Image 1 (cartoon, rainbow over the protein chains, first blue to last red):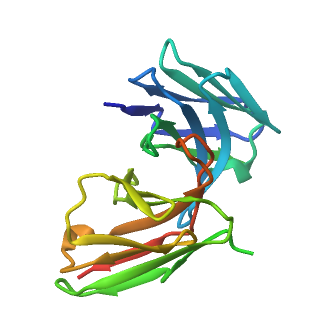
Image 2 (cartoon, rainbow over the protein chains, first blue to last red):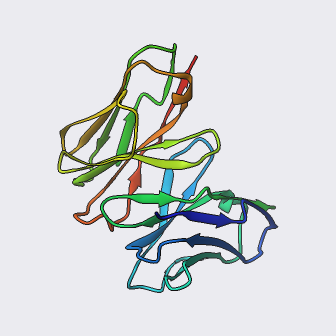
Length: 111
Length: 114
């Protein structure tokens, strides 16, 4: 049974700092791993999707990596901005239309 | 244009009532989902539909009945609402035949059962 864990649960950083959010999963037989952003009272916005055959994906200041052998994914945010403040969720797809979400990391970037 | 829309956005109702939440996607996707996000913000899948057929029913009480009249719509009907049903319900869709593609989420329906 796939379980997804995110560390830390919450993070507060000053503006401009580079930061790393961590995600771990128990079942290495993962089809893909997706990172989402959720703003308070809003739905989820997909940030990056890494297929099982890939090791990383980049979009602007965001870089996500995937290491299936160790069961880990990281989301790297460069030069953080107050607008990056949100909850970041990682989700592992084990196939068969089933996606398992972590509990999220609440990020606060101070101006 | 809204890709995945849900109605209503807020729903406040009494215990024991029956209610429905509607979801529509205009992305041409063939797979749709319902998720529940509880008070601790933990998101759990409830149902997956692919081409109007139920693929996943994740041990959800049978008071919850999804209905997909066509590939663009997936509605959720809840009978005999209970206090524990209070949560945010998210609809999502994706274009996939094997469950490997990006999911697009609706804005959520905030259900409060009194």
